[in-house]
Amino acid sequence: MTISLFPVILAGGKGERFWPLSRSGRPKQFLSLDGSSRSFLQATADRLLPLADGWENLWVITSSEIAQGVQEQLPELPSSNLLIESQGRDTAPAVAWASLEIKKRYGEEAIIGFFPADHWIADHKAFTHTLNAACQLAASKAAIVTLGSKPTFPSTAYGYIELGEKIGTFNDLPAYHVNRFTEKPDPQTAESFVSVGQFNWNTGMFVFRASTIIQELYIHAPEIIQPIAQNGPGIYPQLPKKSIDYALMEKTHLAYVLPAEFDWDDLGDWNAVERLLKTEDNPNVELATHVGLDTQGTIVYSSNQEEVIVTIGLEDLVIVRDRNVTLIVKKDRTQEIKQIVNTLKSDPRFSSLL
Image (cartoon, rainbow, N blue to C red; front, side):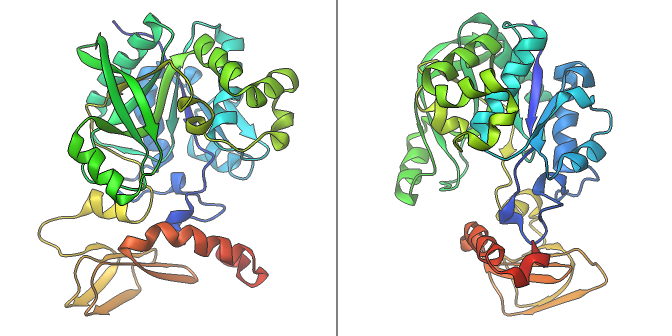
């Protein structure tokens, strides 16, 4: 059984851990780093269009700073399906506003899905199969369905979902009650989660009925949904900045998880490029004209293929050259790129680098 889905792409993020390639006018979702001609945003739309049954049912929510870029990337998207936030307030307000708008247009039984714009998913057939299962579960009961991904390493950059009691099978896939969410654990905790085998990574993809999500937001996050429902999106600057995980998913008793059938990566920082593109015959990942001597485990990127990057005796680094910036960072410290970006923001001399 196939159930209609109204997918919403969350496209307001900045992707600062991909700086200097990702900048204010060119956020991560506009990039293509997997060898494809399609940006991450376009690839996300491509995956979701069959589930949405056409552009008229696909939605995007983004920030005012990059709304024009979204329209250029997705020219077929109806303008009425593009929600533009005046100020980014994280994912909870985005989910609340979009859900209210879809309920208004299609009714409280509408099945809504939320999908970050910058994820990598290789197997579209398995993705569609899993989403159809999520839609069946969301249609069958009051459920906030999240998609989990089996951990392949003890990441401290991802959130984790503990699988609880199995509640049934949907589209031949098992579904479980969520015991708890744990956001970005320390290394020891991440190791224990992976070894136990009862935890999934939280992919940040959710499916639910409009009535269910709105009811749960009124219970657990009234400070977010009530002002939007009463005043519209003009209230955005006054809303608290909260993710949907903190505002709702850690509190609701209606959370269920479907372990995903497909390989998934949230492309959180430059190390994701290695996970996508590493080959056995090359000790490095090269997206540049690179000449290396005794260099291994290094990611090398340049936006100008006529420039040559030469390395000698390097190991486990990320080297990025884009226009007027060169970044060199140890692979185990790429999460700190955001701190450097914040430092640059505080100094007017570096405004051209952002």
